[in-house]
Amino acid sequence: MERTNGNMKNHFKKIALLLLVIPMFLYADEPAKAVDPVAEKLAEIDTLKVGLDTLWVLVAGMLVFFMNAGFALVESGFCQSKNTVNILAKNFVVFAAATFSYWAIGWGLMFGDGSTPYLATEGLFFLGGADNSPLTGDAYAGVYSSMNWTGVPLLAKFFFQLVFAATAATIVSGAVAERIKFHSFLIFSFILVAFMYPITGHWVWGGGWIAGLGFHDFAGSTVVHSVGGWAALAGALVLGARKGKFLPDGRTKPILGHNMTSAALGTLILWLGWFGFNPGSTMGVGDGSTMSHVIVTTNISAAMGALASTITAWIILKKPDLGMILNGTLAGLVGITAPCAIVSPASAAVIGIVSGVLVVLSVLFFDKIKIDDPVGATSVHLVCGIWGTLAVAIFGYEGSPAGVAVPSLLTQIYGILAIGGTTFGISMVLWLALKFAGGIRVSEEEEVSGLDLGEHGAEAYPDFNIRVHG
Image (cartoon, rainbow, N blue to C red; front, side, top):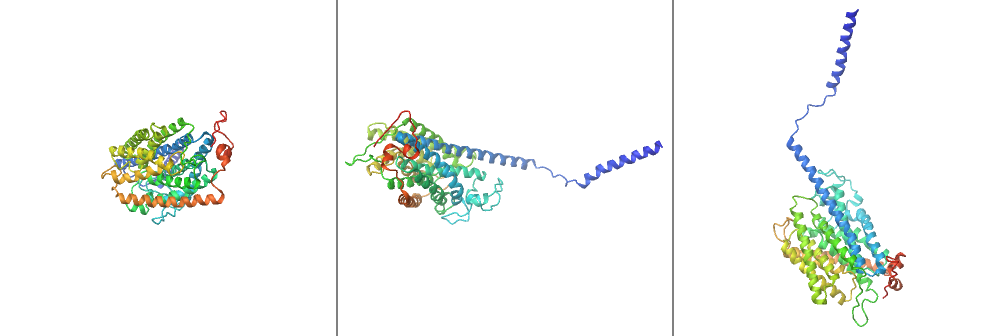
């Protein structure tokens, strides 16, 4: 009996062992392939590169976003205290409006596929049933093939381009300040970012017809700044001057800004933001050489713009006017935006000097022909944006970090005229349509008492009870 029990135990053991072994054969995978350590390491390097490039693009985009604070401080500081709330509200809400209009319409029109050389047609609302990006696995990356030159995720590309689009709309705010209706400005800004900016932007950065000519604008002297400047100029013309700016005897009455501390701080914020604006346009870290080059040329041009405007204002106005110094700094930044990756640091200094002189002469010129621009936006962004685009052909050199052929001066002029003429023409039509549809200018009573009370029912400095009439 014990022997029988022992035999039964052995049988059970064999059966149990068999039950354990059989599944191993039934569910065994194919023989494991040998891991190539080199390929595995290269894959890790690719992943790390995408991560670093993405981090840089997002940080640069955040710096450009923070420029909204700079614009708000500059514009409100250069204007009268009674309009501070209005200007801050415009600069705040314009980014929200730009976010929606660019996401819904503008991004697709600017970078979508299925396009003609003049207009993109796919990718609105990030729709289009695109294939996945082979590098990052992004959904919908395929309908934006003009952006496939950079391997960062699609949404990183979108965010960086969004903050650029919003900048173009913000430029308009300063030129039409202190007399425009709040809702009219918002409507114009929405249409600018949804249609006008992306259509001309597609011509250059979306693989459109101007890019095909060899036109070069690395970070947007024309694509962003001149477009905003042309739209601002059209608005200033349709609106007319502020009450009391130009006197009946032909003299120009200075309307002084109420807070130069704010204006100076805002300019410093913009200077900082430009270190995201220009080098961020590399859309990747690379070996760091292009980023370093762009940061240095950007800073040199800004510094020389500040110095040149100081000296020019001192000579012409007999005083080193702070407003001119601040605008000279911004002029140097706008001037270097297009050529920053294609010119040497020495050339950047010349570009900044010319920008600083130009902005002072331009502000005085616009006053002379009675075009009222409270913050000098057209002088900074339009005039110096044109100059910076021309400087690409004048100072660009072969073998630069941008790795592109230097365009001819004629090509740059052609692009400036095409984009400028289109933007100015459409802007004039839109401003006039808004004017006849319901008016774009506040009443004379509101202008005198201040847009803060008339448009918003609030004051920036209620405890001080400041009133500036005229």
